[in-house]
Amino acid sequence: MMKVKVGQEIPELVKHPTPRQLVQYAGAQGDFYEIHYDQAYAKSVGLPGVILHGLLKAAFLGQLLTDWLGDEATLKTFEVSYRGVDMPGHPYRCRGRVTKVGGDDVELEVWGEDEGGKRTTIGTATVQLAR
Amino acid sequence: MTTTAWVIDKIKTRIGVDGPEVTALVEAGHVTRFAEAIGDPNPRWTKEAPPTFLVALAPVSVHMSDAEEFGTGWLNGGNRFEYFAPVMIGDQITAKGRVVDVYDKAGSSGNLLFIVFETDYTNQRGTLVARLRGTMIRR
Image (tube, rainbow over all chains, first blue to last red; front, side):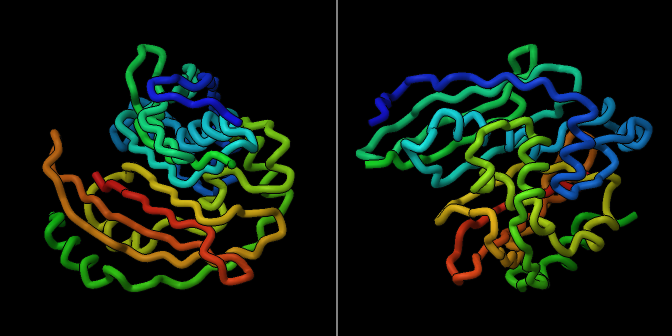
């Protein structure tokens, strides 16, 4: 069984999103909002350029969790809040830490950082360990 | 100029009212394309859908046109997923969404409009598999 303790950091996941990936994700999700692939449009609405989909960053953090959990635990809740924009061409570092352990239930904080270490996405997750 | 108050009053009348149901099959090819798009090679996604896949099955927000009378752009404020049962390839998922809250907040360059959506996902056996809450921001 998985050993989990409060304060433990889970293995990080570094993603390298590209404009191509944003287009791929737009197609896979069916979200064709122009701010994710049209530079001129993104700038026209006050953004620095095309930005990552919030839900793509959520997917990265979902991968961080499922990579760690394997088949030894089940994801019960997963919540993210987008605090800043991220642009393709820059690494996106996903991290997480155990905040509470009660029996089979484990709570974590998860976050995504830009290359300057700023947490542009923050969130929490609860998981249930397999008996 | 359209104010947030005017848009809020309009959207408030829809709080709690279910939008149209959308039913979709969880197709292997779609899940594969989604897993490739997020860059997640986990072999588990040949049988099961990854945690955020449900957002690709049906639109996650409703009543957007009213909100678009205010501001110039949308931002995603956050998402909360609650999972009750796994979503497997071959499942037939029905999504039913609604607005659950609308409010404004003063931002650095004027008011921001917040709309909170909730979507319930039920499988072909009638089991509630997940619930998604999302906050969309109009600025």
